[in-house]
Structures are given as C-alpha cells and as structure tokens.
Amino acid sequence: PVWCAGTGCEAFFPEGDNEYEEVQCSDCKWWSHIRCLPKGINWHDPAVEFICRRCQFFEPEELVLFPPPGTSNLDEGTVRWYPARFLSRDREQQGTDLEFEFVWLDCVENAVGAGQKFSASREFCKAVYHLCEEPGKIKRSQLPKVRMPQYLDPNFAGHNNPQLEAIFDSAIPSITGILSDFSDLHPLVRHY
Image (cartoon, rainbow, N blue to C red; front, side, top):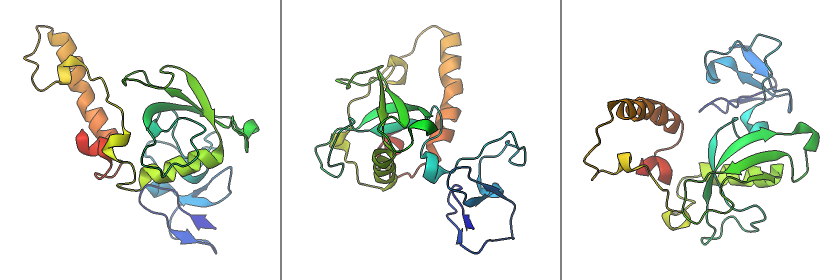
C-alpha cells in the first residue's frame, strides 16, 4: 500500500501503485514514491533506512518551533513557542515521553532552559508538527524575540572583516533553501 510521505505528494493508494519507484517505511510499512523524497540518497541501498515523515515527524538537526513540554492545550493563544533542534528518536522508547529528543536553542530572549535537552512523546510531537504545518495557527505574539547577529540588522553599516562577511553571505542560500520547504504563510518564513 502507498501513502506517500514525500514533499507535497500525500498520494494514497491502499491497493498499491506501480506507476513510480517506491521505498517502504521501516516503521509503518507504507510505501512512498522515491521521486518525492530527498534527492542524492540511494533509496535502493539496503543499508539506507527510510522512516517516513508521519513516523519520524522531524529530520535530524531540523529546527522546529516547540512549546514547553507538558503544555496541555496547544491551541491556546497564550502558549509561547520556542525554537529547538531535533536531535534523535529513540525507537526503544516508542510510546513513552522519552521517544523524541530535542535541545532548546539559546538564541532567544527569555528562553525556557536554553541549551538544555528535553524529550517529548509521539503524541505531543504529532500535535506540535500538525499545528506548525497549519498556516496561521501560531500567532506572532506567541513567538519569542530572536537575538540576531548585528550583521543582520538593516541599520548596521558594516564592518571591516571580509572573511566574516563572506561566511555570513555564503549561509544565506542555505537558509533560504531550508525555509523554501515551508509555507510562505509560516510566520518565521514570512519574516525572513
């Protein structure tokens, strides 16, 4: 059975689909189209394990918005959302509050435990993931202020370090590429 987890596809063929090459998720056992998945990976290599977006939610090292663990009502307009980095999923902890591990980023003002690791359950991650994917659900007032390097301040006149400037300039296409995977309606993407 095919339920493609590739970017923008979501094709659903419970009886199968032989039109495109596919790879099977090692968790849920549904198949996804190889053409819809990240390029540059040999999905036919048996050493490459595929875990679909519905099972994993986040890619390793992905930056995500996350409310403090234990938040009971994610839809509440007063919930604060903070940037965190997804570290890993412990499959042995499946179904527990320790299944997904993150670390809070220290680039925000008044962050909750900046630099500290925290864990969350599959159900909590699923709710967070779907809420973040839904345009307009998280309001600007729910986001913290992010401390940006002085270099990114539009009023910054510049500096006399061309090497540093080249490093920052070289990162802009990568950041833009990452953000292009998300909807322009997302407040962080729209702001950038």
